[in-house]
Image (cartoon, rainbow, N blue to C red; front, side):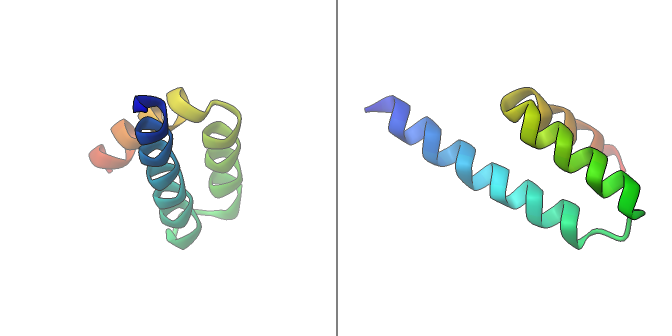
Length: 56
């Protein structure tokens, strides 16, 4: 049961991060790099993005 809840939470945060990346004013190269990081390293990439994004 908990796996479904964690999966749904991860999906929501993943979609939110994608929308934040695509809607940001950063250069296209940075967007592509962040999309690759978040897409290829799902959990770790999201954590890294959230930590760095909060500082910016």
